Length: 194
Image 1 (spheres, rainbow, N blue to C red):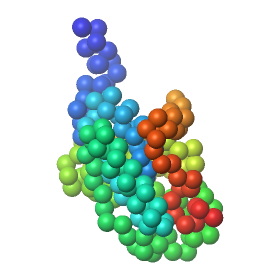
Image 2 (image 1 turned 60 degrees about the vertical axis):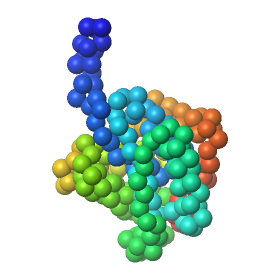
Image 3 (image 1 turned 30 degrees about the horizontal axis):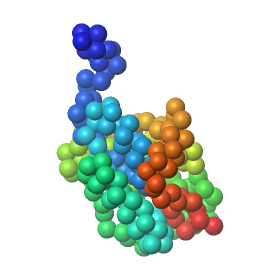
């Protein structure tokens, strides 16, 4: 028992045990796996579904329905925002023709992480994070940079983790298959679908 306590101190786990974390999720396929891993690390995870980039609305609803299903199955709370794709289109105006991982995506990462940081601050969470980094199709270094800037701006800790490491993406795919979850075949916006 004493060894376990020493190990907690050595790994710094005592500092994060039972901390409230608002986890931005773009889809539950990645969100279920990341949530499970964070809960194992003693975070109190609340899912945050803010994705105005997703198009069409039927796709948005399909992804959100899966969030509700997983939240209920694992007794995880979630928060969602009203769907407003038109507002998102205004934010990325002029960047429609950018390639995947281009400037449009950076604006999209920023928008979703900013909203997550603001919501986490508003609701007195200890941390905010995103599952965006589990995907090999996303720029984890840019997401990290944005998250760390928002941490300073809103004075709320950003859990800076590249969730695709240690086979994270592979494990997320495997776990979502075990749960029989819907997995989309494009990022979300109409420009990523082309």
